[in-house]
Amino acid sequence: MPFYEYQCKSCGHDLEAMQKISDRPLKKCPQCGKTQLQRLMSAGPLEKIYSHLLSLANFRRLLNRRSYFAIKPPNKQGQLN
Image (cartoon, rainbow, N blue to C red; front, side):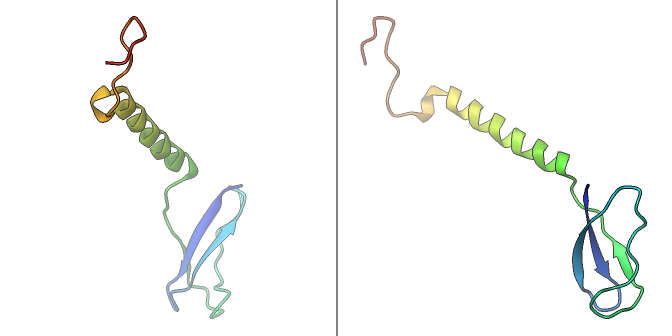
């Protein structure tokens, strides 16, 4: 079940709620009691995973560049230069 973020238009209270996709949006603010809750748009879990994978890909790309390392890899005979 996904998490949804809500904010009350009346008092500004923020909350998260785990709901089924088929559930109706919450309306009543638990802090002030008014029916002014609004569901907010947020980055979904897939977007967060995608950005994490992009950062891992960039790290691998840096690892493949030999100029970032002070120690040179061994030559074909296995000797360090």
